[in-house]
Image (cartoon, rainbow, N blue to C red; front, top):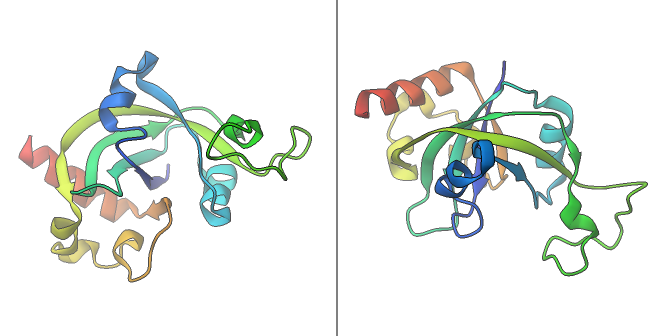
Length: 155
């Protein structure tokens, strides 16, 4: 089992949106960074843990827990000329972008970026590194356990 932090803009898809979706599951779409795409395509597996992170909002931070369900498949938005994620170079025969289904398991209190930065056990977390802007990053088992323990303590 692996662990991931996945960023979503809450005005696009929030933890509440996922919890309201059928089976609490949504397709993770719109990833347009090759490294993040490669994580989804090559490394993510069903059952992997996900820290659901709200980004590009007034108070960014971890807003819930989720898990990967299913295997990667072509992101349909790359083929839709009306989508802001359209990629004219992508074809159904040679898709460039991947989606993966994610199921929300728990909404948590918002664990803001500033609080994450103050936890010594998380100092090496990819999210907290200068210049880190990827929408999907790996999380170590120790970092996962630290965050989940903190969130459970707050519940």
